[in-house]
Length: 267
Ligand SMILES: NC(=O)C1=CN([C@@H]2O[C@H](COP(=O)(O)OP(=O)(O)OC[C@H]3O[C@@H](n4cnc5c(N)ncnc54)[C@H](O)[C@@H]3O)[C@@H](O)[C@H]2O)C=CC1
Ligand SMILES: O=C(O)[C@@H]1CCC=N1
Image (cartoon, protein in one colour):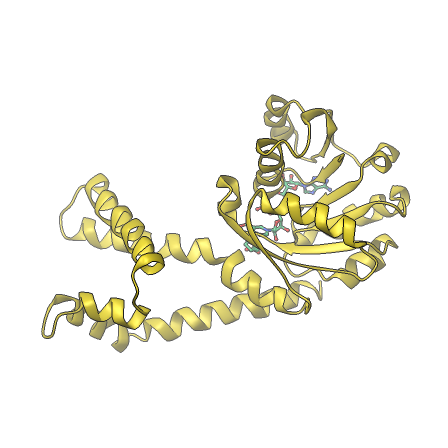
């Protein structure tokens, strides 16, 4: 399969590297379209077939076109892409908020898959949800699903609207996790630890706790209860979290992300 990637930043290249790792695509079968000159210099070490700063008719030789520019850059990309895209090509967009219909209209093109990955895709540990327009054929969808699975796990959603919630939950989710880890490390520093020691304590705690979620035969409430002794230290912390409305703040934040994802489709 020959793949053109438009917007070769964090996510576009995470996808490209994952496809290479699993030998799903050959280096020479990539066309990388990247506007930034700084970024383009870095891309040369990837040794793709073609690196270019602009969309040209050459793109019509590629089976799949991945749109991985920021949502705000889509309009300018679509103006040149609609001139050269051909009917047999499939478009895979990972842009937050931009609906299949907007992409179809802007490109005058029917076969569109919209996906929402997350940054652990860089390690092959991502989770991507995706929807497709009815014009995407089953064999095309399967091929794209195989590609996505090189970046981690995937889930197909019949209802495209749910991608806004996916964006809020797992698309943005890594940032929430890093935010909590950072706050915990800051607390460690406040209590007198060197940053490296605080980071070691927190990161290993997160890693071990994640594995407990997956392996212990306990619900999250039971896992919390198993840590929080009556009248003990954890209870003191949890009481403070509750008084500050931490869980509601987190939920409100995630819903704000969903609202923003919907807004992005309105331009
Ligand atoms: N970063 C994340 O965690 C996630 C991002 N996304 C989506 O992925 C998309 C890309 O995000 P990132 O990779 O984080 O952004 P990024 O800023 O790292 O990459 C975007 C790239 O597009 C390039 N670009 C802009 N206009 C262009 C044009 N006209 N032609 C060619 N290249 C152009 C930029 O120079 C940049 O290198 C966004 O739409 C975002 O919503 C989706 C899931 C997770
Ligand atoms: O923040 C954003 O808009 C993108 C979408 C999900 C993660 N990053």
